[in-house]
Length: 625
Image 1: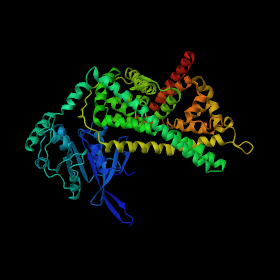
Image 2: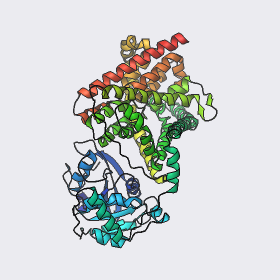
Image 3: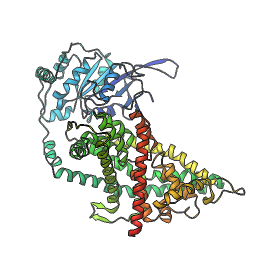
Image 4: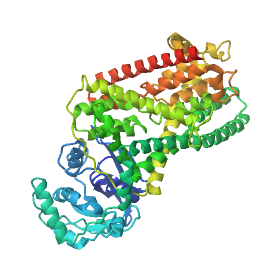
């Protein structure tokens, strides 16, 4: 993927080189910057890391009068004072100091029109860089609806840069971006003052607003009313619990029928294909080695997309910021603060970007503690394993009427269990090797907004693309390797029985270690392959049971019931709730900490917790049964 921020020369089909302009997109968090980025670039987007660091950036392209323009979505920052890693990256990119980049051709500065007073500091810092800058006052629809007023022309004269009122959610006013890029990107024309300290900044902002005819918008009544309930000392946490419970009930209640329908469709396609292939070796390769291994994971796509749909709705509506505030008390009880909540919440999607998000935590010891506990949070890669085992071994029964069923409760319990162990680990770390003084938690709460379906849709499309890419690469490769090891070595010119295959020898070698947990050698093979990525175990088991004559015609859930006891299945769930089964996470922890010691300690600690907890679960449930 292209990562250069500078004006680039790209070769056309005729061999000539054509200039591509690059525009940096910058603004505070919750200003609608990402919505504007999605509106401009649509699906022409890519994600990567800046060279040498873990700060993530998104880049995309759009056309202006037939000319391609690349836009770089910089991290959301409140200022260009280089304190946090985000702010350092923004300054380095804008000044062309980032490795492999040059100064961008222009800057799109996105500010929230309803909170302009607090964001003018960023405006003066960006414009003072001397780059051609277009100031976009976003949320223009809400600003006008609530009685806000401003004269964009007067503000532009004061700032020395063009100003436009836009609404990224509605798509209005965005033709100003095209006009700005067509006009040759003139540099700022007015010298801006140098401000020292908050008092000077507030004084200058007030004078500027007065000269620009700015009248602030009235506070949103719904935001005040909802916050009185959502942030209530008692009702707030209860509402949070209800919201989370409803999400998981929906994932099972709506997602399970969709997954079953997809599984039936994939099984039907596999059977139709098998009839058309006469050669046994090729039929086994395509059906057992590829189709059943890949499809056994692919069927969980509806549930994963549903989970990300609800997370996206909660995030875009502004509720998740309130959840961070609610959790601050819990975070402080273990020595962290509310800023740790956002990375931990991100870890429910994937631990890799969650660990990157910890760069917003100023205290290095708090950041390291958050990095070490983030993989305990239940990521989306665990979801196929959870769904498979819960659906196979836990019957669906109402727990709280239609609001919460037994399967949703089981999954919710696993999420809570991972969180509790993460908090307990943080308590140990922050009271010993990573002890440090607490720092205040400052968070700007965005107003409640209706999420845009375009933004949600793009996010789901991206998650679906990532999941299917994983299925089509890592899981496909693992399924083929597992199938090959079940097919060899040949005995008397024929494939061996599964128990005598190469893969069985590997599983039987480690079986004495895992047998006390209630696992057989097939589960052991799945545990080994899942070190690459957690969900690989589902594809591995799908391939193993497909090549076993005794379970060949069974669904994977039925095959697991054939081999696993209920205590063993619950122990497997507990093992996956705690184990560090992800090489990508280990790699990013090493890169973040600049040491192999911390990821090694993390892997040994999490594996030990997983083994002991799974052993206790199997033994206790066996005795209780």
